[in-house]
Length: 135
Image (cartoon, rainbow, N blue to C red; front, side, top):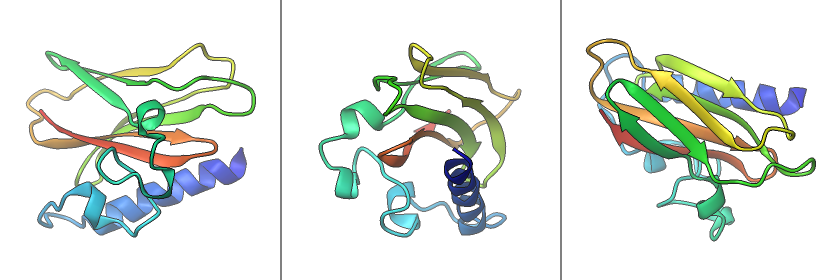
């Protein structure tokens, strides 16, 4: 579990470094090294696994709900969700265990926040997945 957390922390550091300061935003699927982050449009080696791994985002006012429709079993489950800006500003996270019934989290956006956000989902087997959306 510690190795997975270290990987996730490292991924977030890479994400922050990749979008330094006010750098022009580039589509998430193309801005990271291949095989580091997967999306619905770019599932890489996990093609066919998108349906259970891509975070699904819904919004109601300033509330953002993230659900990953993935089974939660002892051997295979979603470890964590995060929500952040494309500039690397961390909005929130939720850590899951294999005993959680579903991988779902919710976040309240800061007042006045507009722009593109990233919702992430980390699977203990199928790596780090990202959904990009705009508020």
